[in-house]
Length: 233
Image 1 (cartoon, rainbow, N blue to C red):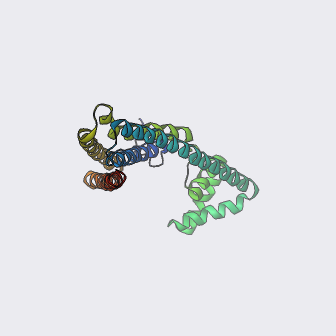
Image 2: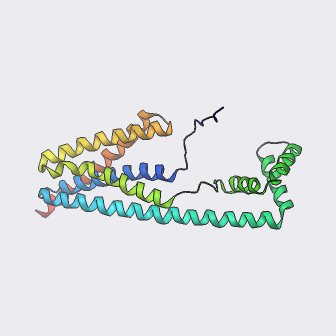
Image 3: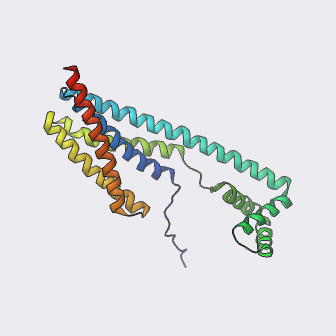
């Protein structure tokens, strides 16, 4: 008989989280930047340069941030696992009592909690995994991947940021502005739908949330750009 497949998603996957955040940040950042600069009515080459700079700066910044933060998380988990391993070796009876108390806190009767704790503590590997899972809330065998998160963040941010920049490779002025707005809106809807489908929180709500965020950001920066362009001409 094949093992049952879990219906749950990997909510802790660092790559998935980084990809979703990266795509959303890339889209919002560059649609705001491109339309903000375009609002000042500069030459098309200026908008292209600003959009490309925003794409590269944002992608590298997001990737570096993910690499540093997730690696720090990895090191913290590794350290805490070693601390827990030492505590199990130094005071197994105290750790068994602590484990029983945690099971009691979750609702097991005292005698059942003690029995389960005794069974778990009879296996060193199981005891370590259980203590780490209950006390730290992590799986020591499946730590977050810093490089996976960094690469996912870089690629997804770049894709999101390229969407509003794409029309400026071929057009400029009002045509490119309109195309950026349309592509940005379509991308925001698609991203919101993907987030809603992945999280199970409702596609309509996440689509409206993503579209509203993109609309507000783009509108504000475009108006600021238009005002700046007016006052400097």
